Amino acid sequence: MLTKNPVTDRASHTEVPAGAYPTLLRTSYTEPHVQVLSAAGDLDLATTPQLEQLLWPRLQTTLSALVVDLSEVTFLCLAGVELLAHAHAYAGHRGIAFGVVNSNHAVDRALTAGELQASLPCFGSVPVAVEACRHLIDGHSQQKG
Image (tube, rainbow, N blue to C red):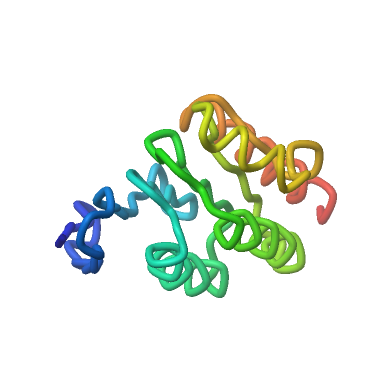
């Protein structure tokens, strides 16, 4: 499946194993230094590496905030939960605000099973997550000044 980023017009290609629900990954910028990485379908052992390939390079840039939108994910495996935990920790190390949109039962259940509900910043929608990250960015810039 080939998707294009409307902002950068870059394409990202995802391979989907036969019989699996298609996984769609896309990125968008809500503002210059805030990016939303969206996934739809199953994030299982075969498709989580594709999310990882998009996620890690973004955490090594000058982004101020990264929101991972999982609102259309129908299944989240343990590898996906671990990826989110590591990404959240690394984002904190880099000073990048990080949030996850988990507005569905499948993701909520996986995060609860992985005991991440208390430590991972989770939100009900992309606009709420972006606004919360914006507040974190503002708080960091005020502390530096």
